[in-house]
Each structure stands twice: as structure tokens, then as C-alpha cells.
Amino acid sequence: MNALQQAQALQPVEAPPADNPHIVPLVIISPVRDEAKYLRLTMDSIVAQTYRPLEWILVDDGSTDQTPDIVREYAAKYPFIRLVPRQDRGFRKLGGGVVAAFNFGVEHILNRDYQYIAKLDGDMSFGPRYLEHMFQKFDEDPKLAAVSGKVYRHEDGKYIEESHIDEQVAGQFKLYRRDAFEDIGGFVQHLSWDGIDVHTAWMRGWKTFCYYDPQAWLWHHRIMGSSDKHIYEGRLRWGRGNWYMGYHPLYAIATGINRMREKPFIIGGLLMIYSYFLSALRGLPRYENPEFRSYLRAWQMKRLKQHFLGKKD
Image (cartoon, rainbow, N blue to C red; front, top):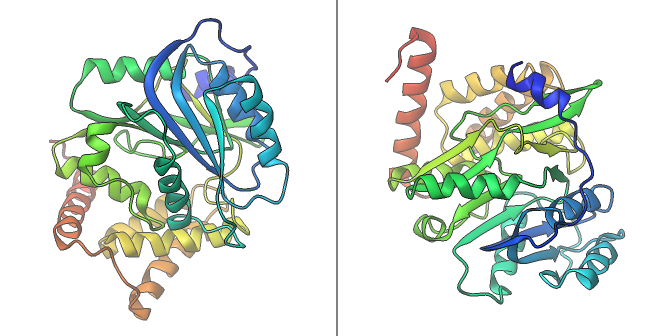
């Protein structure tokens, strides 16, 4: 049985709150806005963990649904959970807005001696040993900056893996070693934060890893990029993010072609490519780090060469 078949067999199941969980020096921060539909799945997953964080801060970024009430309900039962309200900007701002809310949460950390930090979305679920397995990976390699399990979503009656290379840690549950996180300067407040961080870590000599583990799947309960307006806007936004990050044009095209295999089929990838080149024509700003952009393009061209010529390092 391959990894995808295992994922389809191991559907998300409810787990009771953990008895005597092992407390790890971890702070989790969750920027949430109108997440009532799936938030209980995420909160139940955390309280069921065999490894529990020192602190879980949920930053309410202007919710108009029952999100704050749900967090308060859990916080009343579990002292490590806290709700931190943030002034409502009046709309959902993805990318930079999410990072701004995350940074707001960082400012409200009470346990300042934490050694690990994570950004967790409010539409995820995962098995009770997820964190335990992630910390095993950290223990095995002191140069490991960030780690995650593979991400799956339910679609058309089956579970489908979200496409990422093994070094691209899942942005939905981005778990970092604190030293590494501070070394890269944290997350950039832009759509492409969930790419700039990983490549910056590599530039600084760190490793990142997203791996297959039957007890450490991440279940994403909506299509990536669909949390604002609709999936088509999400793909346009993705293309703009690729432009900002500094993608080589050939890699931007290859990325769009690769995403044509996912919903919305064909059109999603075309929208990414269109948005990238429209951003170029409009002269939209790019990440102001020439060294980073040079590194990124060299890495991307090496990847394309390996793919088309079948070469390995």
C-alpha cells in the first residue's frame, strides 16, 4: 500500500483529550477569522495530542461568526488555550494579513522561554501523535529548522495529497525551531511568506522537511487558496505571490502547468501563469532581497534541469 492509499484508508477520526500529555516548549499561534465551520476539528486535534504545547494563542482577526465563542469554550476547559482579539480591519487579508495577525500573537506570548513556535490554520485536523512524531524529527537532526507531515484533502469521495516537494513544509501547520525561525527573521508580511521562509532557511544552512507518516497526516478541510472569495481568485493571488517572491518566468510557467492537474482543472494553472505575467507587466513590487531572488532562481533552474534531463545531485 502506497502513501496515498494509506491516507485514504486512515480517515480523520475523533480522539478524546489526552491523559497526562507530555508538555513541550512549544507555542502555537493560530490567526483565525470566521473559522467556525472547521475550528472544532482543529481544537479537538490539539487537545488530543500526546505532546501538548505550553501555550496556544488563537488570534481572532475580526470574526463575524461563532469563532471567538468556540475558542472561549475550549479556553474555559484548557488553560493553555487563549483567545487574543485583534482589531477588525473589515475584511480578510490573506498572506500579509495572516502574518500580521501571527506577529500580533507573538507579542502576546506569556511563556518567553519557548524553544519551538508554530503557525496553525483553523481548518485542519490530525491524529493524536502528530506533534510527538514531529518532535522526534527535531531530536534526530539539530539542523532541522521546520517540519510537517503531508497534507491531504477530501475530494470526490477520496483523499488527495496536496502537491508539494518534500522540503516544502506545510504552511497550514508550520512548525519551527525557535533559533531557526529567529535566524530567518520570521515570516514576511506578503502572500509568498510560505516560500520565502523555507528558501531563506536553506540559504542560512538549515534544513526543512515534509514527510510521509501514517500517524502524522494533516487533513485540510478546504481546497488550498479557497479561503477568500473563490478558488479562481486564489489562483490569481498565487500567481501574484510567485511574481513577488522572484520566480524565474520558466519556473512560473512550469508551476502553473503542474497545478493544471488540480481543481479547478486547467483554468487554475492558466490563471496562475496569467497573473504572474500581468504582475510583471504592471511592474508590481518584488521581494527586496536581491541575494534571495538570485538564490531562488538558481535553485529553480537547477530543478527544471533535473526534471527535464533526469539528472540528480
